[in-house]
Length: 123
Image (cartoon, rainbow, N blue to C red):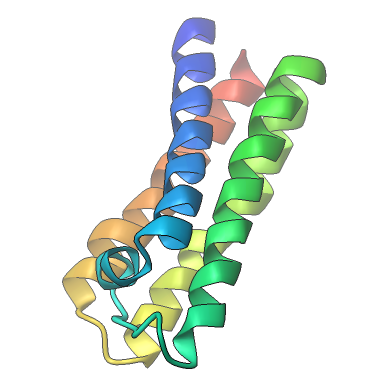
């Protein structure tokens, strides 16, 4: 179970880094994938950059915790960070996004992050 916990944690952290990169360098595509399309040349450009910075930072913090503080610290981090995709679900729904994206991407991500936290606590 320890290998599965660490593997999933690293994959989730790397995915956050990927999302951060995508929101910085491919903002229109990233916003569409998020569920609320935005024009990166307009007022939404700042939102896209902030989202990219947030997601990338989560990935870096997660990797650092796993490497330097251990599984328990990463588990607490994952438990707290699971709130973010849940709030993303609400954001997509409040701004006219599709329910399939809100629940199929964001709520499912929260569930996977919570499973990862549970696995790390058990490791």
